[in-house]
Length: 192
Image (cartoon, rainbow, N blue to C red; front, side):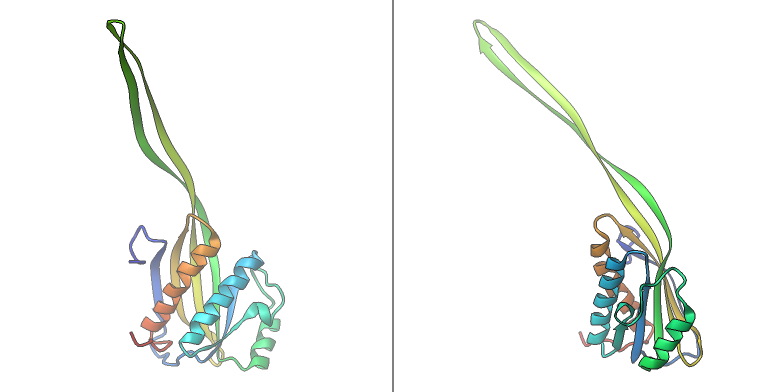
């Protein structure tokens, strides 16, 4: 359902290195955004979801200073070594566009007629209505880096439509990423 074209999340591409067989065990989650509230929520919810899959996930906002679009690599590498993580998962928006949607509702007609003093009297009315709302469309890159190989081993490119709150969109997006990690055999699937 979430993969449909009109859904809030659309998969654009999934890639995994052919020779990569390691499952996630201890991972540092880094969400690169200028909005600290979104970063904190994303990392917290994502780490909770991964913990349910048996993965020790560390939210970067708990162990690293605020990050820019290009964080200091030496600071991140030092923290990775200190924490003993085996993988780093980096999530970032690589583009954003705003779409204005028009929803035309139609026309409402009505009227009243009264018979009085030998004749009909009345009035009629009508009006039309429509609704406009904006949708932010984000293209999101999610990359998994292996600490030993020091290179990306998995990536997921997706498009996320945000019509309401960004916080709500985060909550819809995270289960899709978890499913992609399962499908790529990077985490164990939970019994159904």
